[in-house]
Amino acid sequence: MDPISFQEGAVSELVINVEEERQLRPADPHAGLQDGRLQRKQPDLRLALHVLFVARFKQYDIAWEHLAKVIEYLQTHRTFERDGYPDLPAGVDRLTFELMTQSFTEQNDVWNALRTTYLPSALYRVRLVVLRDVKPAPRDQITLPVVVNLHEVS
Image 1: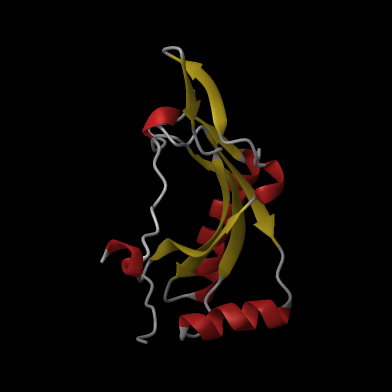
Image 2 (image 1 turned 180 degrees about the horizontal axis):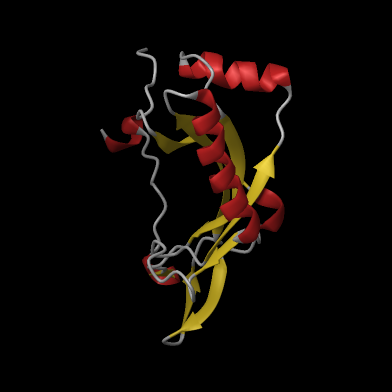
């Protein structure tokens, strides 16, 4: 319940929401044959992260200058792909940044939830964070939980 604090003299980032993008998710959990056996694999999980960039500086105009540099950079580099950024986490092929516009009410709700006073900030939606089922189990090894009636056992 403690209010969050942001580093003085820096632009900090904070993930404030995670949501699944279901419209892009295939429903079929079967991946096909491997070693002659049908493999079951969950579809890729595509997420959208809401990332808040917060500038905390002693001078308000300096905070806006630094935040403007972040916005400018993400406007000219909207997509980060593994080819150009090999340090992306395993399973993440691409990150796409979209600036989000919040109403005053939505913005107020975010800052109230953070339990701190407003600081110059920009909210981005980071799309297509893909988490893959990297170790699919062979279909004959998948077991479902067994429900046992205790009256039948005794």
